[in-house]
Length: 77
Image (cartoon, rainbow, N blue to C red; front, side):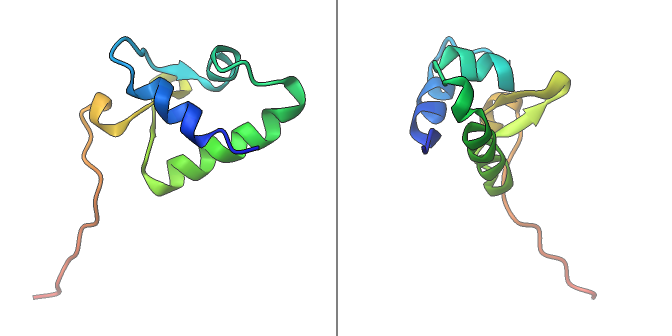
């Protein structure tokens, strides 16, 4: 099951405070048997740069962690 939309909706709330994986799953009422898929969704969002992991393995949107996402390009000259 894809939890991506629910994860992002939760994180976009003004009163959202960064949560760890277990607390996120509990807040979103993820069933115990869905935890492996939920973890894969979190990993996919992390890899894409849509969310970020901050201290104590808590997750939030990059803008909430004062981070900027993007690509840095270097030239040898």
